[in-house]
Length: 247
Image (tube, rainbow, N blue to C red):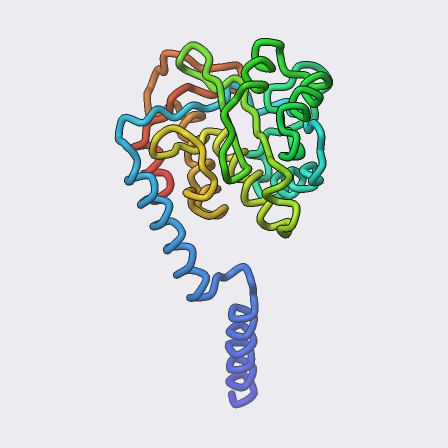
């Protein structure tokens, strides 16, 4: 009996050690942090106008290009792909680009943009817009175009080298990753992009994931008016996105 009791105590102790050391079980600190991140994402969404339209892409794949890559933006994009996983949807284009990222020297901005656009795979009508686009003083600019008032269709990011030349890769990532999240569908308070006003990458990631879950599920509608071949529906509601984040 004593031997059996000793074995029983040993098994209980061993199991306790295994459970405490198993990283699959989140610590209290991790649970608190995850809850705080969700709360921050919900608060951000609730700060937006309730009628804010949220535009998603009709497919899971988005052909992109990097033009005039003076700052090694390509590496930042690879880090974004790793960060967002299957949600990033980006693959290098071999034909027409839907997303174009252009990093040029701000000292000769117009000349560099004009030169970059000669090798861009954007359609001509979008090149004309990019050539004259108003750029942000922050050095990080993003625009997106909408098709039929329903779907995201084209986007571009302009990065001014002068603003990021002397900064570390983290600052460039903040710009590029926030801009890509914006193009993916991240809503903003006024509909325009300013990376300095957006929440952090983890919070944005929760919002993007919820957006595409709602788009895939048809926003809770039994028979959505439109669904693409990739199973996505347009204009997910803010209510659905908030509910998904809060789960």
